[in-house]
Image 1 (cartoon, one colour):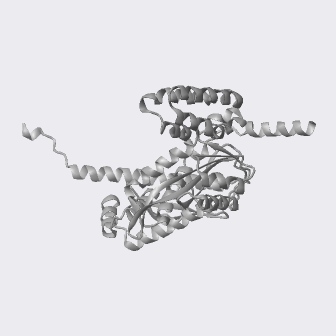
Image 2: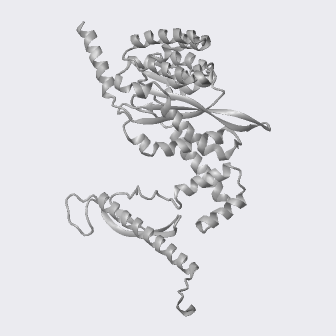
Length: 398
């Protein structure tokens, strides 16, 4: 009976399976490179065509480290046109996920020796201390180039906020604020405009941040959406005199909830949402008056006072196209981004300095911007520009 039992060599199976995956990755990448070369040349191999842009001139070999193992790429050489592949970046030797992992391990305080052991276990090759240092320098240079890039075109809507991280300062752990701005461009897509260290989000920090954005080319700002911050509010008219301010309605609600008993929060929330569900600013103002009176009747005088004092700055969005209202009355688009930053930086604990914190935040922002997040249209800006053109025509005609 025992003679019929099939015995499996587990190590051999794993080795063969790894080779199968690696060979598949290698064949796929080389096929994609050849296809890309054909598209650049605009002709198949040996094809005679008046539309041909260049000629093939063989291949050169280079290695690429992947999670499936080291693969050998046969990169096409072209005459007449440069071959800049979008599939494998030039001079790249490892997947970007590997580089990002190395940077995060370094910032998390993992020792160089430990990084060497980890890379050998994961990818089969050790990464030297010099490589780690060079990767960090290279990454920082690329991130800084992206962070300070010139801005072109108009950005009618701009979302701003600050995210707090921990940093070491003189042997103590202190908060450091990274200010972030997201703009909606003329074509309706979101773009991360910039991020900068803001210390404590005071007036001078916000002023420097806004001036920096403006110097890089930020123009055409109609509305700035953010939480209420006195330093920011004082700076907007100075740097962007044509822009208006919209207080995030979600933050406004939270401010009112801070003086509302827990057992009454649900009822108060429904009353507040009723204000911002009105069809016009005039109707919303009338509803706000009614809500304030109801809150007073519920013995919630502080909540009523907050409604009366702050409601107007939460209604600015109603002066813009109704199709945009749900997008521009809250700061949700940047809040979700901040949560992603917090998730990615949580493992670091306290950063060694503000620059390291800023660089890792920007690395995450750049990654998000390269996804469909920044490619798909967030809103139809034709509604805004058509309304402005119609208003201008009425003024001229009048």
